[in-house]
Image (cartoon, rainbow, N blue to C red):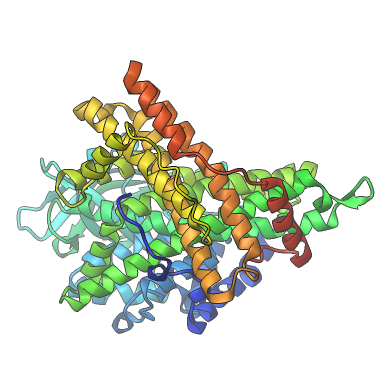
Length: 582
């Protein structure tokens, strides 16, 4: 928002190490060999099948990838864990069960457990002996998680808690041995968290939910009826449960984006393959412009998502390493590092899930009538993708969080937004610079991005000044601002990646990547303009509105670009390779 980033300071996926690529390949191979051939059986919830598949993945070390070696894991870094998550993301219901176990089911113990809790539970979670789930949502508390009614009562002798309440939408609920349960102790205002073993008793389950998608993942309501939990199974401190939930969700959000990216690439592969094989009017449908547009746009958005995702993943890894070097314990450093990029985690959750949403929708369209048939792969992909805009906080909640977190940092003095916003407001009254154009490679694209930042600062600054404390209740305006921020972050990430690749391989070698980047920026300008215009017209009137709309038009102006030909070149490469090849 307020500074420029050099391409030399960003990580790009082309820089993976050989070891990281091997780990990703192991995960890809597992999904291709063990999951895809039996997707129907998985969706039918064949008794014990998901547990067996989890056990097989544990034999390859997949369940313990990020768990320290002292607890039976491989202790790989955050970045490697993200790549593995992407590789597993095309695993449909298995990917959901896997992520629930390794993420929200295991990480609370890893990051918040004491030494005794880690020693007892992590080895068995790493090798798959115990499966885990996460019990936060209740019938009356979804997005408003801290309003949960489940109660924990401490016994008179202080040795046990008795938990009573109801949880719903619990992934892995049907077979989990270990449950991370959130409940309020007595009249506490905030939740506390507990490690609960199903063997403790006092736990009953409703039948499996019948769901639109991810049908093979176990999803149940769980009832706690005077469930006795040893006092030493309180996780972290009393009333720290809401903080645990928020921080673990930060991890979950960015990992969901990685899984969505993996699923997107898998769908693109299938769409490209089908477009090369399906013949209509005497030619493969991939030779027609309408289909080429779809294949290219699917690819452009996936490439854009990947660029932003691994940029921030490396930022998080660097922050974790810096905190550790400063003396912070690894688990706390991971949480703090991710917390520093909570805005980007929310951005990526929204963007990744909506890229997948677009990709599967167009995937169905490429397949035509077969796309609607359960005999072809797109029907399942379409259904399974839909949950991702709800998981880990709805996309509406995450949009509002993106703006809210950024403004709170500005109010705390951690981020100077109003200074640059005021400067941009002053620029509206000045004469635009019509100096000689910079002809250097990417000079135009960098100028677009600088102007996109000005557009976002102008609208955000004016909204804060005009609406002040009412801004949080003007949810439509907040979501307009979030959309501007999301597009801005992705545009910059994509431009930096392509610029870095050109510095490594040369302009000619990267011609199609430049096509993708320029096409994306050309379209993003209109999206930023639309979001900004909707926001301005919501709170400004008269001369103020006219001046801001004029400024917005100036800041989202781009040179003409033939996106049709660019997309045809991209699609031609896809069809020739028969797969997603960027």
